[in-house]
Length: 260
Ligand code: NAI
Image 1: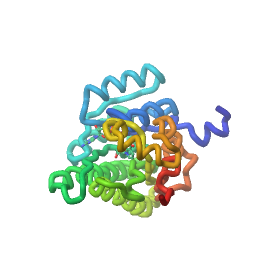
Image 2: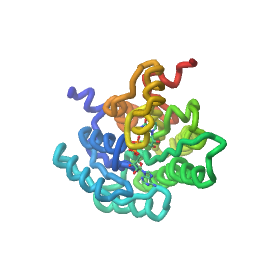
Image 3: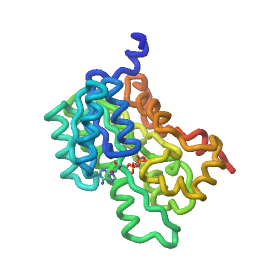
């Protein structure tokens, strides 16, 4: 890479923490952050998975990695994970706030439990991780970049997505509020809004007839590949986006802008 591109995009000397790194988008982000030069902390509840992935990434890139148990629905767990990261690798200056769940159901069938579980993970969990991260970044005095994984369902709505889409729309608004308040400390906060990428959260749906029809009718006529999502995240993580904050960036093959 040229010195020019390195200056813009290299993450050397940075510590990145990925919440929800045990599969799908989070696992791909962890891999990419390490390739871009960051020390990477993989956080998730499934310790066996992140431990194996942590070793795999370190072997592949030669970078430093660490697996920490993390449940975003518990403040104690989030604080412990960040403390461990700080102790072992340093204060995270990049945080991919990515843990999420989906409980698709018709609006009349949604239950109290589904609402609470979705909001507790997707919205309150992201708020909690963002706040704990920002407090440490503030103390550290070097600023940082927080990237919240929202969704195109935070920008528009689909059937059976009342709770999920509501949680992700709130994540977009939360991103803007965090960006405004934390700019004074050099902390940038942006949201990435993926379209459809096949992962554990949606593989059954995307493989179904309904899912296949939905993809065929989308402007790109296909799901995205995870490696097509990564560059947007790297841009938001890196000095290349030093004046970009409070943005919700769709990466969706124009799915979110199509009216019919
Ligand atoms: P996934 O199911 O493979 O990954 C979700 C990750 O979040 C997993 O690592 C899971 O263990 C973790 N997680 C869930 N609850 C957690 C908790 N309480 N504490 C810590 N970690 C927890 O699915 P995917 O697709 O990789 O999802 C990642 C994010 O991307 C989610 O926020 C999802 O809503 C979002 N997203 C995914 C899209 C897609 O098409 N795959 C589209 C738009 C957004």
